[in-house]
Length: 557
Image 1 (cartoon, rainbow, N blue to C red):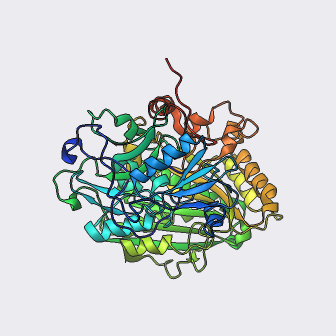
Image 2: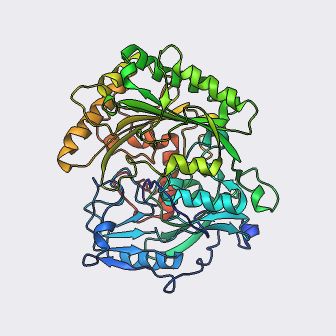
Image 3: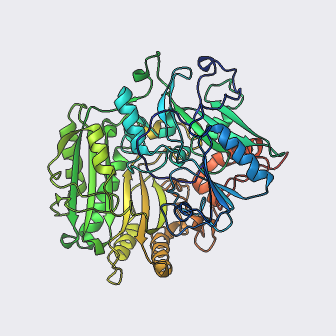
């Protein structure tokens, strides 16, 4: 699906992923009948250049990337997707795919695209009795997924905090969030996927691929557990059931959402930091996560997001959440906060204004218990930086296996405190990782990074196209200096573990920025890339689904 979508609304119905062949009444791998069609016979609108909707649909959340397609086809069913795909292929038009529009790169919106297939109107979430799994359509926004699953059955998936990210891209890239240390990645609970694929003759068909060992299309399911968006076909539905689930009651088949969580949101003023205390603070975060990254760590129920914002913002911000039902939850949170601030001399204060990925959350410098869904809404729905639909952004990622080196911390401090850098909407976001994410083998899913302690996203946002050169140059210089010891990228080694495909960065394909000699596909997919290429050859032999960082089909043997 569209590469890297980011957010969500409310929906009810079904989604993109597969189901037990026996439970669904299908022979393994048999093409499932199209979903019940809605609206005008399940046919979405075709939006052309003269339509008032066209300017909005030319681009997604990042205004750096704009397309001028011949038309945008809104998709409302798998049958609609089949017809739209066959027409575009027959007409020889280059297509791209979009669900939520939060791609960090130009996968969906770029000058070469002639047809955008938009799935945002397919946003149902529900329970499928035949599949014995929960269904999620690709256009469902993450908050809508959480609302529907929780209100209906008390369950959830361990997805991201950004409310309006589309499920389509979030899931296929792996998907993670504040519950991942306790429950793994989103794709660790993916049971099946419904995909419209096209053969070399241009004929489209809809396939349901499950994780069942005897499913002849199991490899297509596997490719959607971290293979990234826009690579294999059009995802029209996902189904979720946890791999250890037993029984037939829906509420027993997926992750049980916490009733309450203990949350903390703090602001750390830059005015109290010099280079020594800044480096100690960031190093403390890394050290704690390295020490508590094992799958069986008692701290796996604690997860934190730390915005190391540029000095121009005035402060750093951190949000931490613990499942309140875990014995000693308050002691865990207190010990974590003490470990992160140890030896720094900083005094945390209330997070009274937005900070990077975090909205303002005043009064939570003193930890407080909140209902889980309320906390999810609080942290994800009111952020003026990352929800600004008029902004331009640059993003770079890395998985960390070990703590920061002194050289890395020195580089980070130097760039974040540059006196000529005045953009407050700039940050290195540090995300808790590890725990149950690390309980899964690297080749069990397409998402291969299964031994990390924390994940990073370097990012900055601005509005004027004339400033692109300055901000992208600053970001490249910071990233290159940070990873200078490994030739400008987080190489696959004992300290770092490559990049996250849902945070795609075309610089990794460019030897001017990636000087490591490690191919970008290894940085994102590690040893799983050849297998993804074989899936690509089987299900997209004509390479219809392609973009600037798409998987290339394996060569014929």
